[in-house]
Image (cartoon, rainbow, N blue to C red; front, side):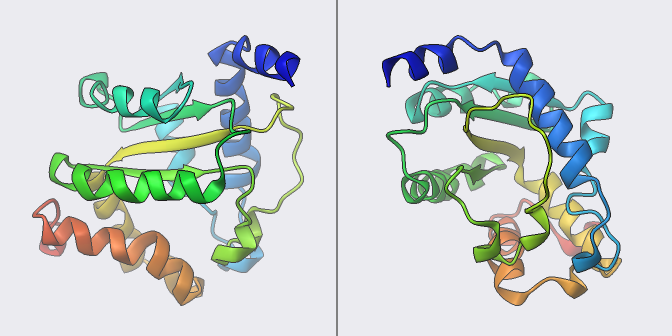
Length: 195
């Protein structure tokens, strides 16, 4: 077990960047039949291409909390906190952390989304993410995506006006989009009339 931890934590951030970029190209940017020919994440590749994504390695949730202080100064739209050692962190604990943090971060116009290797895309109606691809980083790791709530909500509303979510199961839409959008509107971070 100790060898695994050393090997994972010594991996350079550039490996994770290559891995996430490859995942973006080969999974998130590929049209899906389940989505009526649309791609799972229509803005991901554009954000990478525009240099709006930064990636950092966080050695635990305390590091993620510390990293949140630097996100606004990063001049990026997305910060991905890579969690290389998720062995002692369950998917539920990661979701609870994100949910708790989001309650306070809404006022700061930030929103977190988590990925844990134990997550089952089918549980959220995201079966189309179960695509075979060859990762650059063979070890499993978690991620927390930090984004501006106002920009994320505006992008969601833009997609909604184009019918993007028409094929989306209600539970998925509710859990991943609707609740977040309601929080943004409730806290004055977005007005639908703005788009």
